[in-house]
Image 1 (tube, rainbow, N blue to C red):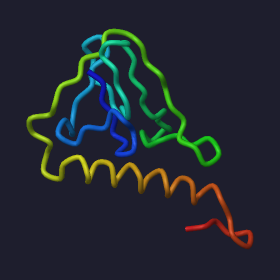
Image 2 (cartoon, rainbow, N blue to C red):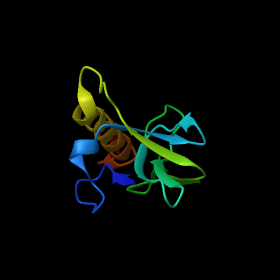
Image 3 (cartoon, one colour):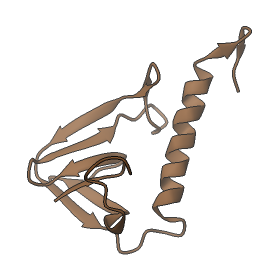
Length: 108
């Protein structure tokens, strides 16, 4: 099975989200794509606070290889996948804006 969290990716499957991805039995955090057959998962590279690490205006990624297992979450939590993705997107946007300035002041 292959799954992506990006709605524009061909392996996006809203019926399978949210999902947990495991690498060699250990749950991955920040996984944006996983392929069980190829044994590969792509996750965002976390910064020191655990949010997405940015390189320029791109989110840095880690490619992880090994035994990949994808499981549909049976209990997505109180807010579900959309809230999780919204929080990650807002964190990435805030980090991006903090790196840029307007008129010599940090852009808030």
